[in-house]
Picture 1 (cartoon, rainbow, N blue to C red):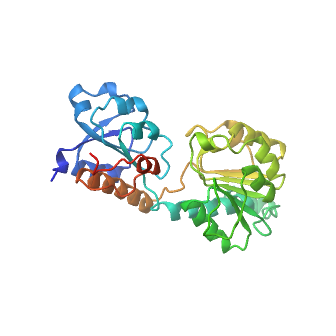
Picture 2: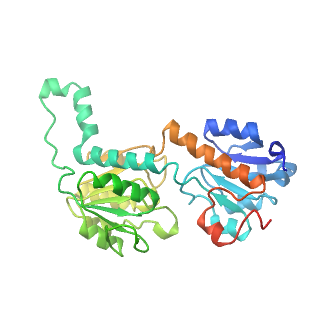
Picture 3: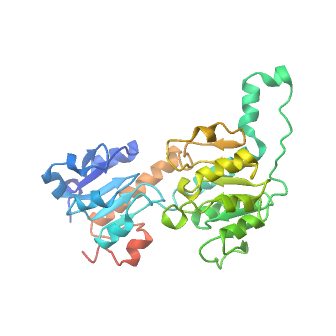
Amino acid sequence: MTDLSTVKILVPGRFHPETFETLQATFDVVTIPGRDASVLTEEQRQAIRGIAQGGSVPASLMDALPNLEIVANFGVGYDGVDVAHAAAKGIMVTNTPDVLTEEVADTTVGLLLMTVREFPAAERHLREGRWHGEGAYRLTPMTLRGRRVGIMGLGRIGLAIARRLEGFGVPIAYHNRSPRSDVAYAYHDTLQGLAEAVDTLIIAAPGGAATEKAVDAAVLKALGPDGVLINIGRGTTVDEAALIEALETGTIAAAGLDVFENEPHVPERLTALPNTVLLPHVGSASRHTRREMGNLVIANLKAWFSGEEPVSPVAECVKAGISRAGR
């Protein structure tokens, strides 16, 4: 049986502190500040067999590590990992699904309520002494009552969001690449068709080329002047310039965003808008959930280097037939 303490794991960039401590106690960990493998010695590059990370793994980094076997991604989304390149090289990629589903779904409902009821602005009204000086905060023009919700991406997280929203008594529809057979929600085969049918659009789809800028000017126009956009998926799924224009001109009413196109950089035109609620990508950012995500990263690495199949391989690697047994 492999002595895990001899297995060299690369951690490029910043990483979850508690998980990093466990990694160091379990494996032989090497760190670099970014994704440039040239800072590694030749001996290190030859010895590294795994990567644990929560950002990006480009093809160039994989190619620089000739004995790389597995990339353990910290997060359910892995669009930053060149998974097609990994699969072609026989490198396993894992992610952390399920353990963050409930936290992100909770955040989504909170963000939706904050956006339609203007809770952040109402709180500022109190904190700035305006309640005492000027009177009560205005009656909000929007409410969740009577709204129709559409979800782009009815996967694990999208479904958890839908289940929560059922309790609010709002009708729910969705758009996926294909309809699900286990739900009764109305299905729309195009995103624009979904936007036309609802006034509240929640983005819970993964990032990547297939969804890049899918929410464009046409979709926003279809959502309409009473429309609210909520994005907790990936910033790249929304055409950010078109969204800013739509918010400025009243093409849609408001937006609640936890993700952005070029994080952590958020355009000043977006932060200046009063009809937005903006969060710094905190969907799963509780200590509890991040700890569970880290535990799954460790579990995937331990399983792989103990000769077992990983707990949560990504679909592309499963489809490519990559397995521990095949090595």
